[in-house]
Structure formats: C-alpha cells, structure tokens
Length: 148
Image 1 (tube, rainbow, N blue to C red):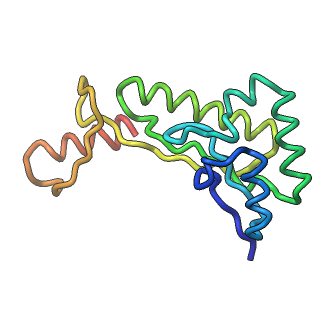
Image 2: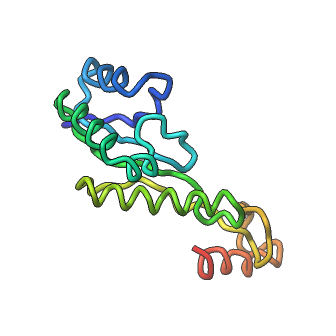
C-alpha cells in the first residue's frame, strides 16, 4: 500500500516545509491542489504554467525528497452559473494542461452544481423527491441533462 496526502491540509506551511512534513509522516505521494475552492498555496496551476522556472524548481524539490505527485486537485463548482463557475472552469482547464505537461495522469475535481432553470443566477441543490413539488422533474432534467 502506498500513502498519499492532499496538501491542502498543510496549507499553513511553506512548500518546502510541507514536503518535509510529508516525508516525516512516511507519505509517498502528494495530491497537489491548484485552484477551485482551494487557495492552492503550494502548486497553483496558473502560476506554474506562466513560470516554467518555478515549475521546474518545485518538481525538483518533490523529486529530491523521493515523493511523487499522485494527483493534481482542482475541486470546485464549474457548473455555477456565475463568476465562480467561470473562474473554476478556467482553473480546471489550467490543471488539466499542467497535468499533461508534467505527466500526471490523475486529476481530482468535481462536477459542481448548476442552476435549477435557465436564467437562474445561483446553484440549486434539489433535495426533495423528483415527484414533488411539481417543478422538480423539469428542474432535475434541466440540471442533469442540459447542464451537467
């Protein structure tokens, strides 16, 4: 069995201190967070795509400690109908691009949650049955057939 850790749990540490802590804990892989709901303090995809020197430096530090990037994480709500959705879609796209550039084959993300009907401005989590109230079947169909 190999253990990995999502680096957001150590967001209060510097990049090097976080890596050293992973080694001390016996972790072999790191799931680097780079956007979405995470502030991505250690491995922001947009920053690393813009600065190849910074990317190389961080990859060397990871490798020097015998760690591997188990996954890139960009969990958010790309289906949000507002600015958050737009931001998260871009960050997920950046994460996918970065993964391709560095050979990481696992990406952790979320589908998110769309609005219930065209023109709604906020996500809507339908929690009642699909049969009641009467609008739910149409909202559910819109969310998961038209949007998702």
